[in-house]
Image (tube, one colour):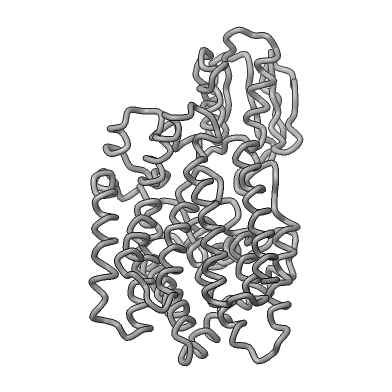
Length: 429
């Protein structure tokens, strides 16, 4: 059992990495928006309000966790973190089911555990990782010789309830599996239970949604593609992966004619792409980063399953090589889309160290949500709420972002401290 041991060690390292991030990384703007807008208010607000940031099932679980363990980053991230642990276990089980004790076991585990497009979502308090875990549970079930369709359907329904964008892969996996296996009579068994679960959980909040509730995405196909397959710092490898993406799908469709599992993965991915194209025609944006993680996951499954059909015995080594690059670019002190939030916790500690009993703080909108989350924590919750800078409004401290614009000193203030990771500067009077 040599290769499965290597995979187990790699996945254990990934679990430690995610736990460290969930414990140590400062809160991000999107996490804080979820906490401030949906977790902090009364329970009824979870049902009576909707926003694209409100990942319904995930928000409910965050509310339970915060209620049980207090107002802190780890408690807020606990549902996603536990889902990330389960996902790593499912990656191991799925690889064992597909490839046994072979090098491809390590390849699949490495790609799923450390691909940059997936990495952040296994511990951050957003619904994408939890939804991906439920989706992979359904894939693990459907890839088996005797799948329990009711259980797979339940996982897909919970996936869509944890994050609504996963309604697309849920539908694609249902149709893709029944088409690949020629089991159209079983379609209701796979579709109905999960759809019912998703509707029951999401119907009331969704009834509050408006036309402007679904706003996040990419305007161009190139931006979408780069956010899914680009690799920071490895332009050549990024270009190779982006060129390989359609080639892998076409090859999977071709060789899937003689491989039921590969056909299932390839057809499901194709259906997802067609659904994305249809939504774009209808005026919705392309997937951008996190809203397309299911596309990356299905593509990885196609890639590794396709490698298993290669007559060249060292193909696994080629497929494993990019994992080294994934490990090299994995961030530790922040979540990649929100590096500007890396100093939120440190900023509040610096303000507390000044000895001001009840400091007034101003910060731009992209920082104010995270700082407001920190203000609600024990020790700072007697401070006034964080406000946005406005003409004529005097505050004792101002936090300024410098990653997107030149540093501008607020009138009558001096710089006190600059965070080395996020680059934000704390000014005081």
